[in-house]
Length: 510
Ligand SMILES: Nc1nc2c(ncn2[C@@H]2O[C@H](COP(=O)(O)OP(=O)(O)OP(=O)(O)O)[C@@H](O)[C@H]2O)c(=O)[nH]1
Image (cartoon, rainbow, N blue to C red; front, side, top):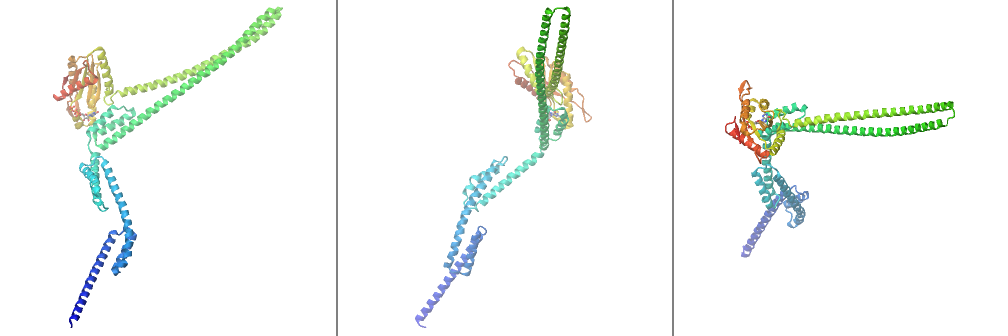
């Protein structure tokens, strides 16, 4: 082989190899492009139907090895839906961001979000959400938001579970005190007692809630009934007044017309007498005179009878209408007095403690103000005492609320019995009583108050077959110049505090 032939063969080989490399490279490129198209179509799958279709065609064309130049229309066809998809994505992205922000803000407004969750939420809204640039990057933000929601929801559910069944002694005591201060109609008393006992036995939030609802319902019924009765009273008062007015107008009109008739009858009679007078003057003979008088007297007597009848009718009508007016006034008076009675009963009831039947706190406040006023004017000596049953809670706890109620009733009766008639005792609330002793200087109050303490201490209480001694603590003070009702009360209360702190079952002064 000549050198030329060898060189040519080498060049041919090189050319074949170069072509092979080129073909391999192209094959590789086509493969890469096919893979890319497959991945792209997978990534975009389901976003847009026309994009899906275009990508599918592109993949098939690539697999067939279509000339790159012929691929150009496919690529153009894909670009358009891709652009549209980009616009849709950007809108969705904004909507998603707004929705996450909105949900986060709502959660921020919620009460009782644990601190840790609140902190995470603030970070999510202020930092994480700001840095997001693609739809996929929202996923972690969404995940964080959902987890915060879950934590809050769990915390809330736990709070509710615990609260509904949890014991609330403070709330129960407040509800009981409130019920004690309220006034109920007689027909509701038993029901209210039942509710009060129910609250004493079960102070879970659930039970307190239903007890409070029931009490509100009873109050609403009472108010509605009271309003109806007041309305009924006013309507019937109005009707009776209208009837009275009508009767009086009728009577006046009738007596006016009757008096006119009477007046005209009187003038007729006067005229006849005058006529008779004149004619008797002119009579020429006794016979003529007699005939004339007879005739005129007949006419006259008819008129007189008519007059008498008219007068009688008028008198009767007047009497009738006076009777009717009287009846109506009586009816009115009966209604007014029954309403007054009702009102005063209400007022009395509203100043009475329903359990002990002693005056209640409202009555005491009224009386305290009154005594303070008398003290300011007359400078009389008044002792004020606050009395509290010792360890009363343990009576309730050991022997039940009903026993506690009974104890309060017995103590109230004993207190009432062991004071002077001129003293004023009231139940201030719970197991606390207040005593006002007008005309009693505190320097002389020790003896009677010690007696009160002893009387209560010696009551033979027996619970569950066991003899129990119950004691009271007392704090006393005297009204002083410049006192207000509040300052005097606070002083007596401070004295009671001393009595409690120094061992109970004693009397302290301030
Ligand atoms: N049965 C009954 N208990 C009541 C009534 N009003 C208040 N109580 C209860 O009275 C108790 C008062 O308790 P505390 O204020 O702790 O006083 P205490 O147990 O008397 O103790 P000291 O006053 O410190 O001696 C509470 O348990 C109330 O629930 C009521 O009308 N009837």
